[in-house]
Length: 155
Image 1: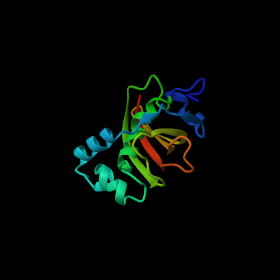
Image 2 (image 1 turned 90 degrees about the vertical axis):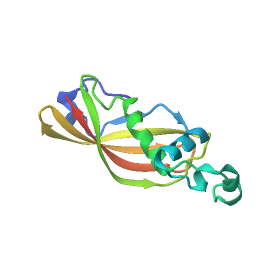
Image 3 (image 1 turned 180 degrees about the horizontal axis):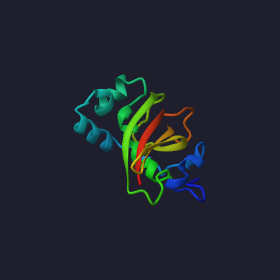
């Protein structure tokens, strides 16, 4: 799914509850995990030490940082049409109720599904949208993470 017909800055509120469908997939690789560790300083062995993780991880190998999976959401929103085409910009505004429910392993793809939850007019051409997101590994029994993402749409 994508943006519905007639979806625009002026009609955002009319589309509360719309399911924008699934984003393009992103492959999680050990290289991305290691690069994320370097960027954040989070070098826990369960993320970066492949040999140790094979021996001691309850998952049988390394896992992506939860915050790496979380950071995927901002870019994924763009691939589903949530931001109206005529918007001048969009700013991350916050997250609510994020829960990490299952691990993401190197070599797996992640995708995100988005439902428009709320729209608040903030004046001066700005609208704050709340979007329920579910990040999954296709075929996995439960989501990798769920949460509500806030974005300021600038018109």
